[in-house]
Amino acid sequence: MQARPELALLRAVVEKELLHHDILREMAAGGFLAGLTFIGGTCLLPLALIPTKIRDQGHTTTELRSQLQTRLFSLAADPVVRREFIEEMRRFLPAATVAETVAQETYWQYLTDLVRDEGGRAMKAAV
Image 1: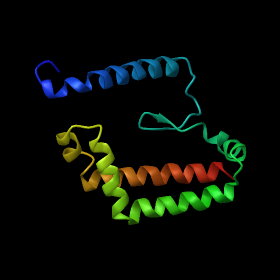
Image 2: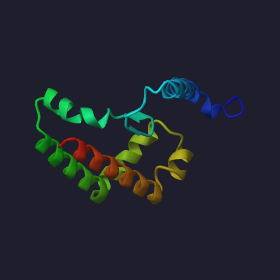
Image 3: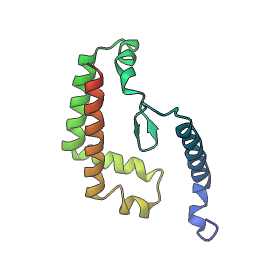
Image 4: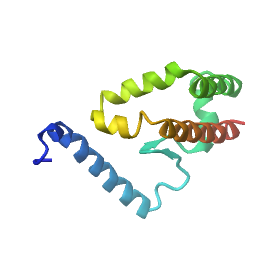
């Protein structure tokens, strides 16, 4: 990072990510991550807890399914969703990284497939 001053602002982000990696590595070694679902570095909750969390929020699994299906459809079909996602990522990532990853059609396809698959798992768990 010292050789590339434009990356100096990312130092805190990198350090935080390394800390998270170390914590997750130790938790995995201790067996504490069994049954959790992750997308990237984000823990979604054990899928078995989804029905409980839905009820705790005063909603029904039918509402969850409806909202999830609507959002999954818009993720795949609405170009505005993709454009807004890319704009949001530009707030956090260097322009070259966005251009080489997030803005690529293949990345968007990978991301939407992943979210659709995890959404399907969540819907099955919400029965």
